[in-house]
Amino acid sequence: MSLSPYIISGPCSAESERQILDTALSVAPAGANAFRAGLWKPRTHPGMFEGVGDKGLAWLKKARSETGLPIGTEVASRRHVEAVLDAGLDFVWIGARTTPNPFMVQEIAESLSGSGLKVWIKNPVSQDIELWAGAVERLQACGITNPGLIFRGFQAFDNVSGRNAARWMQAIEMRTRFPQLQMLCDPSHMAGDTALVPSLAARAMNLGMDGLMIEAHCCPQEALSDSNQQLTPAQLAELIDNIKLRRGNSDAVSERLSVLRDNIDELDARLLEILSSRMRLSDEIGMLKRECGMPIIQPERWDRVMKKALSDASGLGLQEDFVKSVFRFIHEASVNRQ
View 1: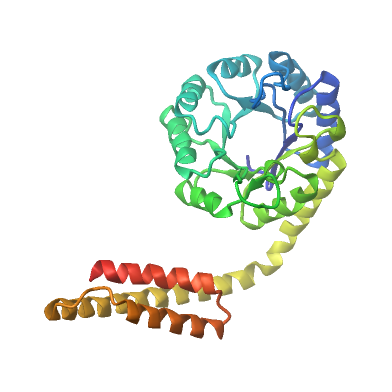
View 2: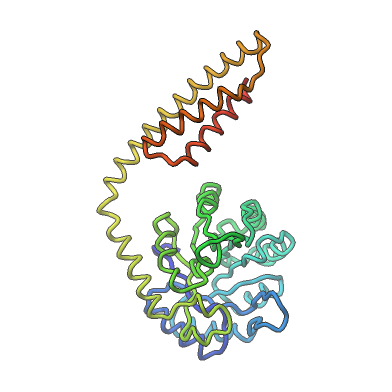
C-alpha cells in the first residue's frame, strides 16, 4: 500500500451482482484503490438484513476482474476466513464488534496465519484502546506482522455530531504505540450522515492518516443497510479530488511548518527544565514540612496558586479548563514527591 492517500471504497453490504459491479465500475474511476463490500453483517436483532453470505464472493471476484481493484470483506469467524481464502480475496478487516472479543480475534488470527492476506483491524465500539492494541498483538503473535488499523470512532453516550464520537486522541495514541502500522480512517461510520463525511475525511488527512475506508453505493437510497452514510460515486470522486488537492498544496507550507516545529521543540525543552526546577523546589519544601511536622497538603496555599494561575491565564489567551488540568497534575506530582 504505497499510494497516498489510499482509498478503500464500496457499499456497506453486497446486495446483488448488479449492485456490486455498478458500484465497483463507478468507484474505480473516482479514485478508489481497493473495493470493499460486507458479506456477513453483524446485526443487533435477528431478522434484519445480515448479508448475502458466501454467494457474494463470486460477485467480488467479478468486480476485481472488471476493474483491477483489490477486493475485501469483513470477517468475524474461522469459517468466514476459510471462505475468503478459498475465494482468493486480497484483504479482510475485523469489525468493531469483533475486535473487543479476544476469543474471536484469536480464532481469526490463527485462521489467517501464513496466508499472507492483508488484515485491517477496526477499533472496538467501546472506547478501550487496550482491546484494540490487544487485537493487533494477537495477529502479530500469529505471524501477521503488518496488520493495518482503521479508526471509525467510538459509541457515543453524550451529544456528538454524527453517529460515533471521533476521539482523535485515541487514534493518535495507537499510532504512537504502533508507528510502523498503516492507519486508515472510516469517516462513514463516524458520520452516519453523508453530509458529515467530507469534513471528517479532511480532518483525518490533516492528522496524517494514510488513507480512508469510505462507503459508496451506486444507489444509496435503495441500500439495505446504512443508506444514510453511503456516498454516491460522484460524491466520492469530489471528496477524493479535494483531498488530493489539499495534499498537493501542503508542500508549499512544509518549510514554514518545519521552522514552527523547531520553535516548539525549543519551548518543550525549556518547559522540561522549568518543571525540573519546580520539582526540586517541591522537594525542599517537603523536607522543611517534615522537619516542622507540617502537613503536606496546604489547602489555602493551593487555592491561592490556582486562583493566580487562572487570573494570569485569562490575560494570556489560555483556556481555563486547560490551565486547571495542567496545574492539578503538577500539584499532584508535587504532593506525591513530598
